[in-house]
Length: 193
Image (cartoon, rainbow, N blue to C red; front, side, top):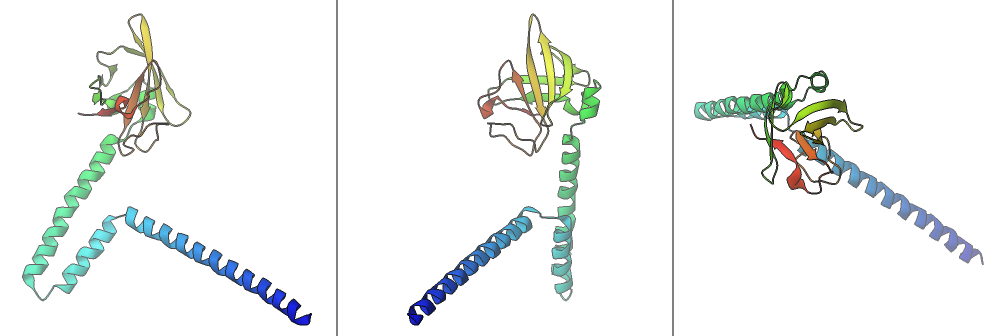
């Protein structure tokens, strides 16, 4: 009978150890995946510079290779500047819009169905008059637009903001418009100029 109790305790101890090992393995696996995802999704200028400097210092014995690595570094800088400029030009100034300045929306917006809206600094050019502007609950900018005897709503979604129920390009500013909520991603408007 003592041998049976010893085996029971041994089985319980072994079960606990297996559970601990499994939980630890899962923790390290998911933590490692998270770190990999962070490294993959955050390419920075520092990483590019470090790579370029490493290439340059490694190849100082060959002047041709050094010149190539310097040229590559110089070529990468403008694209980084362009990305920065594009991100800044895409930034929507909510406060200015709430005060009636639509400068950050100026241009033509088109959806996948070929419908268009054009903004100038004062609002819509030919698609009605914006009567009311407000901030939505989830970071959207909401417009009430009067067009003749009817009207419609318009919502501006700054880059990064999800449109519920629709698949859209989160890296760009988007807008939706109509008397009902959009039902397909083709109804989402993107700035084309």
